[in-house]
Image: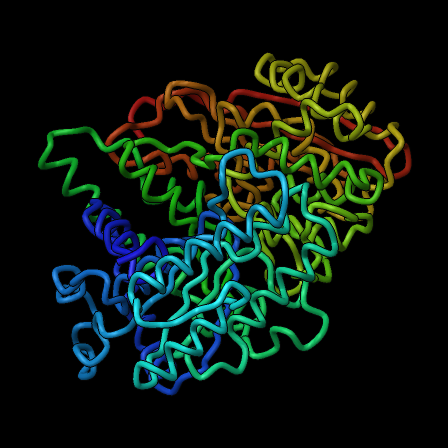
Length: 546
């Protein structure tokens, strides 16, 4: 066993994952890889956003194939054990596993980075095959070729995690990038000693390899390939199973379950595989259930800063998109999955593409969306902090005043804020369609998201209501908001009453804790001719025991 060759680390790391209470068995992926390993010279690259289980899967593959440790104690209990060829492949291969995100301390050059990897792997090979005669000028591929020739066709599986990490380092030059691509090509391409190479990362190879260096790889991305779609991220059915497990654990430990199944969907769902299947952020789901709490579990030190990093490259072009996406709508975009490096993002398409690749936005049927509350909160934070966002920032800053005016039934202040929204320098306030009007309502009520779950066009009573604000505290005031173009605020409120939208609060906050607060009906009318808003807020009733 060495640092890279037949290391026991993948087994140890995967076993740690396997013993966690919210582990999900994704071992069926191995069925796709077993025949590739046997046929030889097979190359797979799978790219996904961060926190979508790429490293967990890489560790699983390493633990399964590698001779470095007997992993039958794990895999005998998983789906893959049902495969008739299971034993034929379990721990039968020499595996070279390299996590390219691990660098020497204070690494300042590509040469230092790649030399460390080469020297470590050479030491591993010489320790495992001491009879091989090497010379100072021999490369890694020279040594591996010698092993293949002198050890009866000895082959290797290569597993490279975070293969693209080096490209995000500011010390890496364009020449270094080409050298790295050449290194991978020389190591893997057209060599008899390669059983299979499996690489994972955020960015597709095509971003960096414009020529033929790595054209032996078949690439699988979330947006372009259906294969492997449900192997990364959690599916609806998997989250159902985990949630049932969570409730059982809470019961056995006599804990109150504070996480709802609906809450998991609201917070962590919203991504899509190529086949249209909805996917959850797996890390956040597991963390939420483990902590018995719905919250943001993005581990980056500043996800809001990362989001703004992309937006600030072209604020003017993406401001309208931000306002519409905050309202829960998608905006049309042409996604280029290779356009996601941290440099030279100048066009709207490049910025939105980068945010999709890194998981800040989701992409489905030609549109990009803010996927869930976990990310929506980060966008909200950005909108309320960055003055360079212009009118979007200004409207967001008014949102606390708008909420307080609404709760106080202060129609004149509400009308003043909406008039300001209409008169500000923004093309989206032409109000040509309901999406644009709804976008502005979302912006002027942005701060309400701290205390409410805001839903649009929710089925309510006898129809669909424009907005319902569900309070986090069941004793707080709930808000039903109806928009009307070329109708009065009174007509909007009458629609709320006639269609019994208040019935939507029944059971919405869960069965154990009943809603007891007031219900406030809010009507907003907009006159296209006069370009004036009319607002009105009335209390419908206070619920005792819905």
